[in-house]
Amino acid sequence: MNLKTLTLGLILLATPSFIEAAEVTLRSGFLYLAGDSTMHAFTSTATVLTLDAAMEDKGGALKSLTLSLPVNGLKSDSGQLDKNLYKALNEKAAPEIRFEMKSYEAAGETATVKGMLSIAGVAREEAVTGAVTREAGALRVTGAKELKMSDFGVKPPTMFLGAIKVKDQVVIHFDLVLAAKEK
Image (cartoon, rainbow, N blue to C red; front, side, top):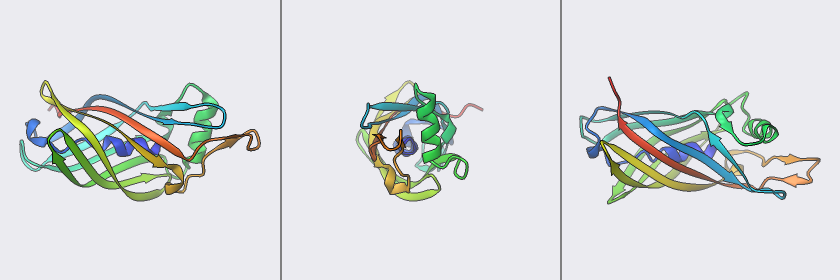
């Protein structure tokens, strides 16, 4: 569910020549997942995101990128929904959603990042594409990624003895601003 969100952050982009630094950090942004159920649509927002990225050389190619978020950092407007999500994502055994970049391609104002996305203890290769724009010494990456919970071994939650069922597909939306890490 919210796991997908991390993947999106990955898109932290492949146009490194606009960031004149060896290390890059997440200046600001948001990431949330949107899903649906037999009762109503819902969203869950990542309240904590951690980005570690490095460039080959100042202004060089993106060398590494890892985006992570704690499962219990996903928050909705319902405590019960959060509780069900944490359980579905196996928070006790896999407390973090993580994306590690393996490669990227950039073309104009679009970048696609490929890497391993780990959700609920299951790792899969995923590709995330985002729009990249320059913004006052930073890069802004925006986009959305559709994922199926079942692809990560996550059984979509049910409530009230199965009367309410969450749909398998979720969409991760992201808007991230990357900048040089301050020393």
